[in-house]
Image (cartoon, rainbow, N blue to C red; front, side, top):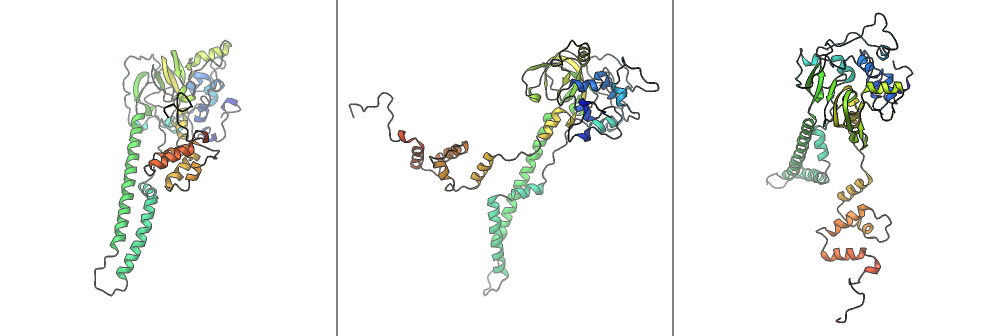
Length: 428
């Protein structure tokens, strides 16, 4: 389907994004991702420009998606979407798929919520199946039993568990073993009491962690929940950001944070801050895709300064306009970054040393390293440990003073400070 087009070749490990079964659209999510990773004008030209994206995504640059779209029975081919209307005539018998809504001018004055046609789950079924929704898959959280098992790994609880087993074993032996008196058989109570205390501590700790994890997830959902302005069936509408789909025409205003990837359709002095997405602090001016194609065709434009791409995570600092959504959810640039950050990072060497130091409170093993004057690796860990030792309650004032004097250079030990002269005063 891609052919031998160099700009649209899949990267290693992403071949599954380029092959989609029963795809009624001309493009796959992998082909659209080549527009932004990195920004590629050759990929935009290989997809037929902004007009090719309009035909391939089965949308309209003016009226946006149709509110009546459900299933898409017919198919748009890659060649049919990328062919230029000026260069080739439309083949006989080939249908050009358009939304049911007629093209009309969009008024940005009073956006209205979209009208509901049937059940909302029946709308845009094929579009959601191919390009997914603007939702990141939920991270698998630990169950209550897993949290309880992690809480049980505390060193104090492990010691208490061993003591409970020993105490309970001895108590049961004394209770049910041979006895020579008629006293009450209650030796097992001590072991059972320790076991009950351990269970209470583990359950309370696991329940606390579970509740905090749920509250954190709710706060994240509330933080990401906001509304955006899009055009559907020729009318501006206000939608939740999670309802954005590939093929939507989103309206840009000054101060907006772009949630999805796209290509600029039209705009007036649109400038974006892409520092959060690319790390570049320079202001990036955006050029409409049609103007970029004309400049490249005439040879009058500099490809380095022509940028019609809207990156998710960037902020609009100036101008107004509209752009065509090409990637949402985990397929967008911001979504890929967030998915890569979900991997648990490994512990750094400094964190490993600090964890060992915190797990072994006896300072005798580590004190010679910290007090040595011939230690060439005087790292920040040693500095932190020395400060902690000096400020600890267990260290007396005399030991702290001796510790500080031991760390001073030899030439400064025992010399009084005199800010004016090194000779003793006459009064002495």
